[in-house]
Length: 546
Image (cartoon, rainbow, N blue to C red; front, side, top):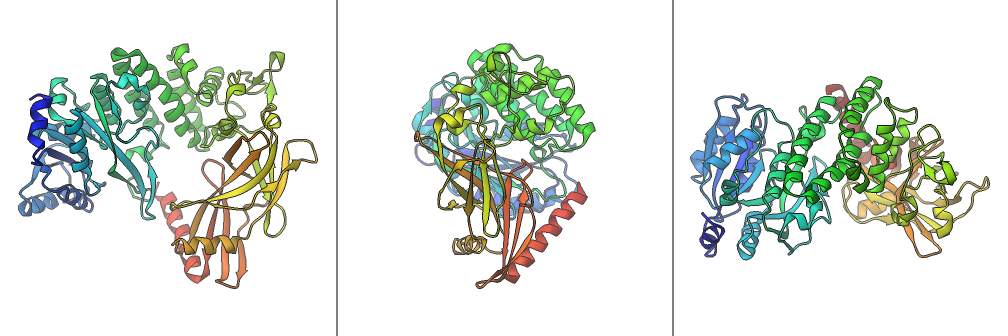
C-alpha cells in the first residue's frame, strides 16, 4: 500500500488508525487506557491490546472489555517477552488500518488526538506525524511538557537530516505512523528483554528519512507515578544496570543514525552528552560504590566518542564529558560536577584558571572551559546563594563567573516562585544589588512574606500543601538578564510555624531538591498541615519500599 493509497481511505473521515496498547500486570489501569483509545471516535478502526502473559488478571479485564466493544481485539501472549518491543511488534503484525498509534497501559490518549494526527498525515502525505506530549505527575496532576520547543506546530520536515535535533525526541507514543512506511522499511522494535526500545525504534524511523508533519494538539498523556511499588523503567535510574541498558540502546541508535546521515549521527551523540549523561549524573546519589561503578562505566563508554562529536556538543555537556575523561576515578569535587549537571546548571566556586588565565574546571583537573566567553548571559552557569537575613527576608549573593557578570553590570535581583503544580510565576519586587562586602560578587536582602505567597497560591486554586520552586532573576545594566536556581546556605532550611491572621498557623518548610536547589513547601491552616504530614509519611513509605 502506498502513501497515496492510505491517504485516500481517510479523506472521507473513515476509520484509519489501529491503536496498539501493550499491557503487563496492569489490570487496574489498562481499562482507562483502552477507554481513551476507543473514545477517539470512528477514526480509530480498531484497538489492539497485547497482553504480555500477565499474571494479575489483566487478560480477564481485556477480554471483558472486548466482549462489550467490537473494535477491541485482544492478543494473548503465552510467554512474557521481558520487554515492550515484542508486544508492540505483535500489535503491528495484527494491525489492519492504514496508520498505527502506540499507547502504554498506564497512559491515556487525550480526546481528538487520533483525528488531529490523521488529518495532518493526510494533508501533508506524511508517513510520520507528531504531536505534543505531557508528563503528568500523579496524584498531584502537575503537567510537564515533553521536549518543549523542539517542534513548531504546522511545520513539515521534508527530511530529518534537515532537523537533526529531532533525535532528542526518543518517544514512539506521541507519533502516528503509516503502516505501509513501517512495512516498506521493515521497521520494528528490538525483541525480547531490551530496555529503552523506543531509542532504537525512533532511530530506525528517522534513518528511513520520512516526511514528518507536526500538529500543535496534545496527543499523548504520559502518567508518572513516582510512588508506585514498581516504578517505570524511565524512573529506575538509581541502578547502574539501568544506565548500562540506556548506553546499550544509545549505541544501537547512534550507529543506525550515523549510517543513514552523518548529521543525525552527530546529533545523537550530542544528545547523549547533553541530556542522558547530565540527567543520570545529577541523580547519581551518594553511595560511593554506585558512584565508582557509574563513573567507570560512563568513562569507558565516552572513550569511544570521536573528538568531533564531543566538540559539537553544547558547552556544558562538552565540559562534563571532558572532566569524566580526565579522571580515572570519581574526583574529589564530584558533588560540584553533580550540581553542574542540574537544570539550570550551576558551576560552584572556586574558579580556577590555567595557562594565560584561561578558565579551567579546577586546579586538579585543568579541563578548559572553552566557549565560556561566547555564552549568552542567560546560559551562564552562575551560582546564586541564599541564606537567612532576619524575619521575612533572604540574603542573596550573586557570584561572578570569570568576569562575565561584572562586564554586564548586575543591578537588581528578585525572587521568582514557580508552583510545582503548574501555573504562573509569583515574583517579588526587584531589589538593588550592591558589591558584596568581601568583594566576591553582589548581594542584596530581598523581603518576602510567606503568608502572602500562600494566600496567592490559594487564590490560584492550590489546595492543601503548596510546593514552590524558588529562582533568582538578575537584571543587568547592559539589558541582559538571567534566571537561575538558588543554593541554600546557613539555617535557611529550618522548618517554621508562622502565625497567620488568615490561616491561624502557616507551616513553612524550605528544602533542598535532588539537584541541590532551594524549594519551599507551605501548608496553610489545619488542612494544609494535615496534607503536609501525609506527604512526609508517603515519602517515608516510598523510601522504605525501594
